[in-house]
Structure formats: structure tokens, C-alpha cells
Image 1: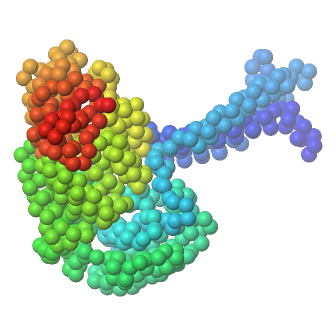
Image 2 (image 1 turned 180 degrees about the horizontal axis):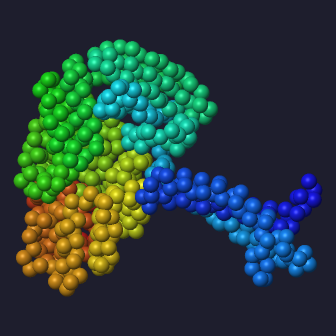
Length: 606
């Protein structure tokens, strides 16, 4: 045995084995890291693992049977011992091993300090020391029909919302936990990634009116089951089950409820068919895209069955507001924005009338007021929504956009960051503070966030639009066009307007003499305005008054706006929009300030 080991060392088999294992591990880890970011199929990392494992014995046999000589590779038996250069080859292998180990250390440091794509959050949730915290993983659909998936997802979210009402309990937001749907990760690993102390998981089986829900509470530290239960009930008892689970979990965590039984699950319908349609429509609303048209149909049908179902009215209001943005034939059309804003206002008003405790309804009404430039009323509604549900990333994001629109950039960034912490896996919430940084002219920060979002989701179009806008501001029009064309799979409905504007400018055309300001909301007008300031005030008015959900170009802190804000037409515009009245009551932005009771001045931020 001793002689065999000595011969293995002499033939450098041991060194080859060490070098192969280190390099093989490094290749596997690098492929596993970059594969999701490059959009590679899921089988690619597995293929490399198998290839490395299969290759190990082949390489070892080759290193035993063959030797490198000055004349080339020869069989070991054919090499005279006195002419062997295995000692020289061994030193080269030592250098290879050292270099490989250095690369391993560099890679491990990179992994430690860089967010990975798709699985690790961009911003880790902030959990207070000693405070109970949990995540509700998506309940598994055990029904015989796959299309019942929306029901199990809906039950998961309803339970999550119920638990969020427990005082002193931190609950991770929906999208963060739904990113783990279908994964086979250990719950302890998920808990560590989400920064929580406990995990709730379970399953739902629905057959007609029969319902079986199982749930269990698991401690992240050691995987110990703190509580578990199975509920066999009729569908009409679904709300009672949600509340029972919440009370049982609170008891297991020793979290004081401070509520009487029946105080957690409210604002619900007694019509289970209406509830089922609500879950289906609300699921389609959360997905955005063309499915929003189906969401309107299902939510309306739900309300036909129960016209006093407040949450369905609130969901319908939000659907009306986002429909023109996500459904291509409505995008950017001012008459459509105005029509849907009227419908959203009626639906949100009905929801608040039926139940003022629905946060989504106040959020929708806040956006209605924001579109109509009723800034004080809008802010009051957003604050009311946050008082009801302070952990709603959706409300936080809308309030973040509101603060951005009125020029309160620091507060906007603060609320955008809060939304991002609650929803670390959803790009739209990561982008919340990016837009605020963009408005505040913090372009490097905005671009860094956009880059992280693209690493999280390479097809998220808004991140590319932000990067392109930054390149336009720098006068790098070819680079901006290249960014827009770098993502052919992005759902970017305004791409043709951006690319047409950029191509026109790159070709030497400059801003068109008769620019159609009707395209202002799509930001093609922004490109033309930035290049030659041609019709800038016209573009600003269009973006402010076309029914969009922001204040147009008025809120941007770009350096070129410093001069624009000294123009009397800018003062007239912001006064006409009602912003001055808001600023006098709620605080001035950095770029405008009071000059007594009847006058004000705007200019470079100070």
C-alpha cells in the first residue's frame, strides 16, 4: 500500500485529483450562479455536475497511465525513470492548485457580499431583535383540479393578512414568500433567507363545498414543529378556519393578540361563490398583464352575487387604475385614463362606504385624488391606508410615488426602501426607491438599483427604461438605444416610441418641429424635450394632465430643470396643478420655497 501511494505521488495522480476537484467545484459554483442571470435552462447546472463527476475517474486513470515528457504525452511504462520530468510537472500542478484556491476564495467573498439572482433578496427584511416574526409559505394545492391553484394561493394570502393584524408580530409580505412556491428548499434555509424566526406551511384540498386545510408552525432555528392542525369543514367555514389558525399560531408564539375572537377576519362575504370569484379576480389583478381584463369580469361577477362585498369593490378600483398601464390597447390614451379613473373612484368610494377598514380601498381612493391633483386628500387616504395596514408594500409604493410627485424626495426614498424590504423578491417594489433617486437626480444610485433588479429579473422592462433615461440625460443616445434593444423579451409597450425617438435623434433629425405632445406620458416626449427643450412646457403640461398617476415632469430634479424652474410658466403650472396649496400646508420641496403669504420662488434645489 505504501509503495502504491508513493507511485501515485510520483505520477502526480494525487496533485491532479486535488486540482481537478478544486477546479471542478469552482466551475459548478460559477455555472450555478450565472445560469439564472443568463436565462439558461434549469438543466444546465445539473449537466455540469454530472460532467465533472464522470470526468474525475477518467482524468485520474489518464494521469496514472500517461506522463508528460519533452517529446509529448507518452505511456508511463515507456518513459525511462531517469528521463522522467514528473517532479517538474508536479511543481506546475502545485501552482495550478494555488491559483485555483485563490479563485475559490475570491468567489466565496463575491458570493458573501453580492446578492444572487432570483433566490436571495436584494434587501433583507428588517426584523426587530426579540420580536416574533414569521413567513407564510404558499399552501400546496391538493385539489384534483389544477385550476384551483388560485384558491389555495388566495387562502395563503388571506391567512397572511389575518396574521399581519396580530399586534407585535412581524409578517413577511406575500410576494417574498410566493417566490418560494414550487421549490423544495428546507424551511430552515427559507427562514434564514427571509430573516424570520418561524415558518407557516400547509395545504388546501377543495372538492365542491368540502374543504380540508392543514397548517403547521415550524421554528427556523431547529426545524421543530411548534404546532400543527388539520381542519375538515365546509367551504362556508373558511373564515373561521383562518381565524382559528391565527389564534393558534399567536398562542404558540406567546404573541398577545389584544383582540377578541372574531376580530381578526373581517370584511368578508357570506356568499361563497362571490368569495371564490373574488379570489380568482384578485389573483389575476396581482399578476397584472392581459389578465386584468379577466380580473374585471370576475370581480364584477362577484359583486353581482354580493353587492356589499367591500374587498371586491376595492380590488375592482385598483384593477381599473392599473388596466390602462398594463393592457396595451389602453396604454397612454388620455380618454381611457380618464374613463377608468371615474370608474375607480366610484368603486373605491363604494368600498369605503361599505367598510372603511379596507386598506386597499383607501389606497385606491388616494390614487384617484392624486390623478385629479387633490394632493391633500390623496395623502390623507394613503396615511389612512397605512394606519390600517402598515406592512402593505403596495400602499407604501403608492405613497412613495405620491411623495415623489410632490417633490418630497427624501421621504419618498424612505417609503420606497420600506416597500423594498417588505417585498425583496419583487422587482417593482425594488424599483420604488430607484424612481425617487432618479427624481432627486441621484443617477448613480438609481442605476445601481436598476442593475440589481435586472439581476433579479432580466426581463423587467422598467429597469431598462430607467437605465436608458440616464443615458439620455448624459447625451449618450446610442447607448440608450442599445439598452432598450438589450432585452427583446421585455414586455415594454412604449419601446417603439422610445426607439423611434432615439433613432430619429441619432440620425441627426433632432427634436421634431411639430412634436405630438400626446405622447408625453410615454416619455418619448421626455427624450425630445431633453435634447432640445423643444416644446418642453407643452410636454410638461401633457404629462401632468393626461390622467397619469404622477405630477408629470414637474417633480424631476434633473440639472436642466434648475433653469426651467425659474421660468414664470413653471410657477404658473405648479400653481395651476394645486401643488403650491399642498406645499404651503404640508411642506415645501427643496426646489421651491415661500416668499410670503402670496408669493413663492422656484429654482435649483437648496
